Length: 234
Image 1 (spheres, helix red, strand yellow):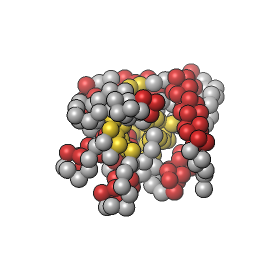
Image 2 (tube, one colour; image 1 turned 135 degrees about the horizontal axis):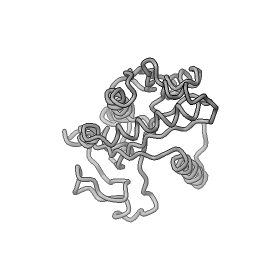
Image 3 (spheres, one colour; image 1 turned 90 degrees about the vertical axis):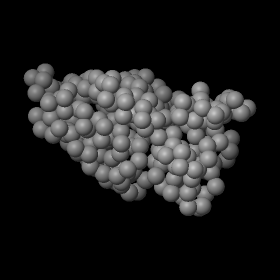
């Protein structure tokens, strides 16, 4: 089983809109909802629930997680895209889904998969899966004897996954800033970092401009890979 190290990146990817300072100062005035486009369990659900449990201390309002699986995340994404642009409905965006791949791999439907360390580690430790390589730049502490793809002769194949927090387009900038600051502070706390460490996740906050640049570069990279491999969308 090929592996890659997983980093948790909290980001807001939204368009700007105006809002009075007084309204932004009052935000939030009611509970927030974090939509996870997968069923309960798995790394995406874990990240969302850790944030939900710890954001109240920074925002003064609770956050609840709502699982909206189906249609390759389209159902959850549509629910958030259609919600009011007021900062009360968030989407926990995964780099990719993993639970179906894990089930297919352990069930013998597929022979190999590339997935997050957090999702696969329990199965590797239980002897149900075997890790072949790490896609990160360095080996991971949880699997010190598993070499990176670069060490195995594929230096250009290095990459890592991420998670992001997204809001409906048009969410006012002051609300976005307040939420981003709360997420950044939350991710830096010891309880959150400890929880992520135990789940083989690395908490790294990346603000919108840098993250947008990363996504654009990844799109370019994987488009080129697809073209060279003659992979087409179906």
